[in-house]
Length: 238
Image (cartoon, rainbow, N blue to C red; front, side, top):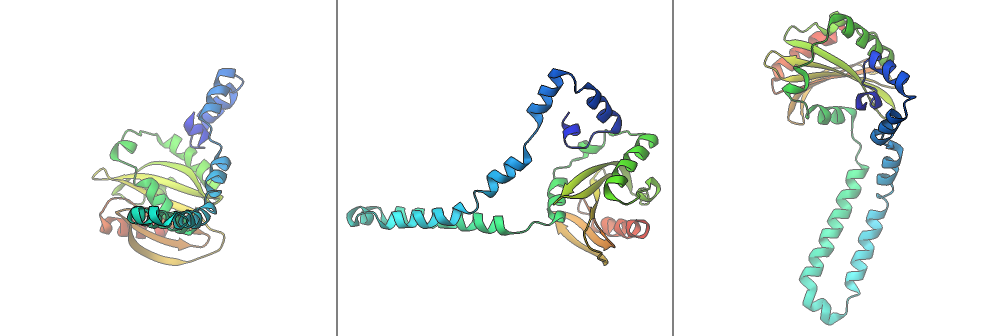
């Protein structure tokens, strides 16, 4: 049910759940598992403007304490004032900082372990159906032969994610050493052509490049040589 709600379920499972949604108990289960994402976003967004106002008010209240009490508690009050000011400022700057889709994808992939993927045993027919669904969402045809272009990486699955209202496709692999590696493809709004550039994200080796309206990120493990070579092969066929 969670894979269905996250738009990650296989087509057959989606059809099965859609047909079974007349069941009152199933509807109740889906309602319990569903998250009102707009409400969560609104709740957190509404907190940001409050931070600076709260900080100024707290400092003014500290200075309003009578002189005798202030002298007795000056050290503690001053420490509290600095703590509140620091917390408010850091919260504000964190909220204002823009997070790239690459950073989000890296944070998500950092949760992967070998056990996340090593039990997946999908046959070719299922993989082809899965890629058709992913290709339709991305607006770009992905062929299984191209995704298997790197012999050191074993294709495991593809799934549809999203960032800022645009599709973000994640294609998961296991390396020969059993390390999870993912190839992410993001649909951009403008055409950009950038060569492969390597860097470390979330402690993992990564390589990113752009071709037309699509941006690519290959990330996983600490073998920068493998990631760079694999990125070159993917860039040649995708």
